[in-house]
Amino acid sequence: MVVWDTDVASLTHKRRVPPALVTRLVGTYPLITFITPGELTKWAEARHWSQRSRGELARWLSTLPVLQGDEDVAITWGRLSAAAMRRGRPRPVNDTWIAACCLTHEIPLATLNVKDFEDFQTHHGLELITAY
Image (cartoon, rainbow, N blue to C red; front, side, top):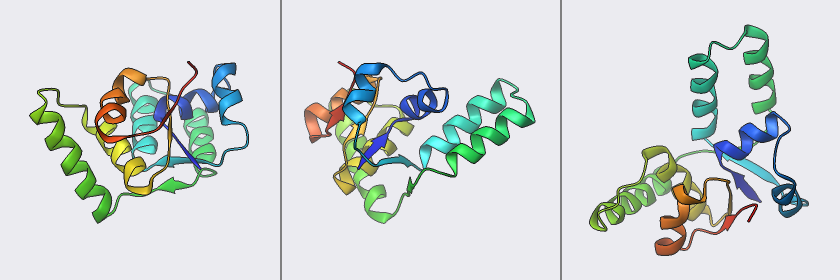
């Protein structure tokens, strides 16, 4: 299993994932976190996507298993957030939720936004799958 960050999910939907990342994901079982449908919906709404395009996105998202937030994920999120604050480097809320889901369930994260997750990798052992 591999969690797709929102950027990977978006590019997969658009069929624009870099070949190097596609190669690394062959044979894996994709998941998204509960954050990704919200982020992609926000993107579609903010950019005034047509009803047809929104429907296509919703249908596509419905094919992906979603890793939900629960009490364990929330506790991990709190610990990650506090640790980042102590380091003087608070992380974006949604990235922290995604990392919390991955770390709680010990599932690697596929992302092209390494800078958004490298603190979680360095300080908490988040496994990243990237195109690099």
